[in-house]
Structures are given as structure tokens and as C-alpha cells.
Image: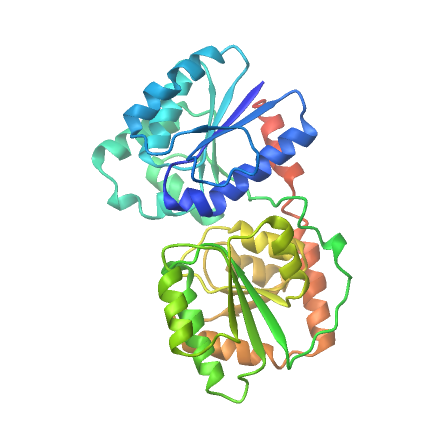
Length: 363
């Protein structure tokens, strides 16, 4: 069998959750289904970590179809499946093309592709509805996206399938309890350094922290890159927050785990989310969540007690208040929160995802 994943050639597929999930799927297929050949189709300038891939960097939608034609035809007798990781126009066209020549098709939405649906052209929407009908399965990364998809396509065909994390992120590599010092709190952010992720809000909140009695309490590790990096870096320099905020850039999973080992919370003050893999990685690593009330995160924190919610989006003052409240948590309370985090994080296993694929006879 051939399991092919397609990621659109844009900045978000290069550094966001889509590529992380694609790598996780490839890892699980390679180690648990040796009879399945795994392949990614995505831009060459994305770090591929040794995963077999077809380069589509710099190609237009039509050029991609022509370029992929020999591959699609050559492997159509291999019981092939193509997993399209977005509802972007190029992914939809390629998904339809592969489906018409005999491939099984999964459509998978992770957030912005459906959240900004109203901005798409009429032809984009028309093609999406045609491909939706032909798809063998449609997955949404959150219940909220499922509701949006049901409304757009006037169908309950799609289902909520939570993302899952790489086996490297496991609470087993950490001690069940750690010493929590409320006078020295380490926070970690992992993801795209973008305005919509709340990075500027977070830096502004740290400016308020610096001007308060708690200026030496908090340290934030920012892991990732993106179009907002330069602005964020300039703001940190302007406010002289270099000792409080550290930019690590893009890091390997092994290096991220080392940062997690010295961190107390994972923070995401985002303006909009579905269910980010970075948060799930933090949870299974035993890091309680600090998050705005977006996507599935609000539900997760309320259900599990695995963190603290920031009351308002795009509000440095609310982030500031939340951090000050965290400083009041004692070691016993922190360890209780951490235990709840680890227990709830077990829901996001790779086995759940692949059991669904097996049940649907997709693999």
C-alpha cells in the first residue's frame, strides 16, 4: 500500500502543525505498518528530517498536476491513499485528480482553511464541495471546525479526529513530580512566531511584568520561526527583555524536549486555534497549559483542570493578570495540575488515529 500526504506550499505548511502531524503520521506508519510505503508531497525548503518526499517547491497548481501525473498513474495499483492536509485550492485539485484515477482520498482541515472560508472565490468553493462529496473520509482537527464544515458543506459526513503527538514526547521521560518554585517560573511557547499567535501580546505582557515587583520571576522560551519574528525580536530589544525572553528559533524534537524538561508551563495566547499539536506535545510531556479561550483549548482546560485560561484574546493586561495569579500557585497545587495534564494528554495517542483509519478500511 502507498500512503501519500500532501501539504500546500505556503509558509504555514512549512513551519506549522500540518507538517508536524505529517511527520508524526509518517513515523507511526514506518514503525507500525512496515508493509505501507509512506511519502510526503511538499516544498523542498521545508526540513524533511529524512522522510521520503516529492518536491513541489515553486510550482503552480496546474504545474503540480502535470508534475505528479506520472507518479499518480504509476502507483494507482498499489492500493494507494492520498491524505490532503488542508482545503486550500491546490490541495483540493490534486485530491480530486488522484481520486479520479483510483486513489482513496482523505480531506483534513486544521483551522484557517475553513475559518476564513468567506474570503475564498466562488470557483474555490465549488471545487471544494465537489471534492468533499467524492472524498472517502473528511477529518476536522476540532469540534468547532466540524461545526463550521457541517454548515459549509451542509453535511455531517466529516468527523472530529484529534491530532496526536510524536512518541518522543512522553511523560515517562520526566519525573512524576518536580520542585515548583513560584519565584522562578519557566514558560515555553512552541509554534509559528506570528501576530495571530499572540506573540506581541505576550511580549507586551512581559513589559508589564518587568515594570512590576515580579520582573525576575518569569522566563519565556520561544521556539519556532515565522513572519512575526523580526517584529517580536525588535520589541524585546526595545523593552530590554533579553533576560526574560529567549528566542531559540527552529529546534529538533530532541532539543525541544530538553527545553520542556526545565519548563513549568506551555503558553499559547493565540487569537485563533483548532487543536494545536504543540499544546498536545506539552501536555503529554507534563506541562500544564496557559492559553486564551480559543478552539478546543478552552474545553480541554475546563474538562481536565490541566491549566489556566486567559480571559481575553489580544489583551496583554489579561496575560499579565494570569501570570501574576500563576505565581500564587504552591508546589502541591502545581503537581496536582501537572498530574491532571499527563492523564488527559493520554487521549491524544497515535493508536486512536490509526484505529479510525483501519475501521474505515482506508489502510
